[in-house]
Each structure stands twice: as structure tokens, then as C-alpha cells.
Length: 277
Image (cartoon, rainbow, N blue to C red; front, side, top):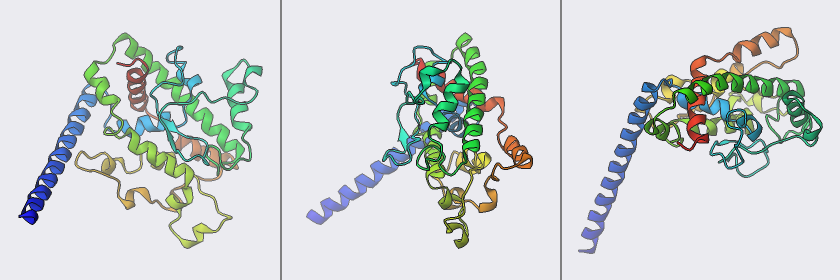
């Protein structure tokens, strides 16, 4: 009798799990439609994760001046030695001499160059020049996002749209933030497809198209529940070149191109998060 009761309990548990999974999948599908009907792209999660992965309070205050460290905008923890790879709120991250400077450019340089040589901060395998290029690339992205954000302030999204935009556990944002954090913290594991790759003299460089939008047609298929090894593990030849000459800079510029749909995705997410819609 006891075994029979356990059997029925197991059946009930499995049934409840299946129903819960089906319900979650249905909600994800509905949200995908809701977001796209509001103008978001099908790569919403990847676009947003790219733009917010290193954002801070100073950048968010461009969108809403009253923004504090309690902002509901998750980001990758640039302290690579920390236990928490992803932060729930973008931090008020500043350089040690922030108050000396008036312009955002110098404040940004102070923040970046004060960690020069620190392999456990930011993208540790980037050279100082590459770190500077990366941070100004992100500032360029935020400026473009701000243009879309200002349009949204004139024509705000509905609460239903915002509910889906903020559902980072199901709309792809958290999934891609996790990949960003992994690619930054353990780049050699992402790109090391040969044993030679684990020679300590080699370094690996993130390619934007793969880090932020790698194989998106599979990642964001509505029927797909997770990331496969083939999606996560890439090849050394798919990484960026070291930024040592003009030819490499041309490739970096090509990789860094972004579309306005990506900026709209981020603007939608930030509007809903910062305005508590």
C-alpha cells in the first residue's frame, strides 16, 4: 500500500512539473509576441544584455537623473575575483579621482586606467587600449539608446509590455548576461578548441557578434529551453584580433556595429526598469 502511495505521489509530482514547464513556455511565447508587437526585435535578450553588461549609475542617470544604486538593472560584476558574477543592480562605479574631472570622458578614463594591469578587473585579457576602446564603444551604444529612450518617454509602453520587458529570467536577458559573464571570466574555455589554446602565453579576445548574439536563431527559438554546448563553446578563429595596428582596428569597428533595433530593445528595457512601470 505504501509503495502504491509513493507511486501515485511520483506521478502527481511529474505531472505538476510538466504543467509548470508548459505554463512557463506559454508565458515566454506570449511575452515574445507582446514585446515584438511593441517594436522590440526577436533578439531582445541579446541586445539588452550587450548594452547593460557593464553599465553603471552614472550612465543610467543620463536616462533618469534620479537613478540610484537601487535601479533594477542587472549587470556583469567587473570584479572578476568576486563570488557573484552578476549583480542585481548596476553599481555606482567610479575611478579614484572622479571628482577631479568635469567630463564623462576623463571620468571614464580614470575608472578604466586606474585598473591598468589588473587581470581580475573588467575584461582582464584586454590590453589597456582595448579596455578604453571597449568602454567608449559602450558609451556610444548608450548615447544611441538614449535617443530611442527619449522617444519612449513621448509614447510610453503599456504595463503589459513592461512586465515582459522586465521578465529577465524568461526573455533572454539573464541568459545572455550569464554568457557575457562566462566569456569575460573564462574566455579560454569559450574559445579554446585545441589543447594548444591552454598554453598560458595565449590570450583570447571576445568577438561581439558571438559574445552578444552568438547563433541567435537557435538561442532564441521559442521551442528551445537552454543553451547547448555547440552554442557556448566557440573556436579560436572566431575571436577578435589583438588591437595592435590599423588593420585590427578596422575589424574591431566592423564587429562593433550595432543596429537601431538593438538600441530600441535596450531603451524599452531601461524605460520599464527605471520608471517602475
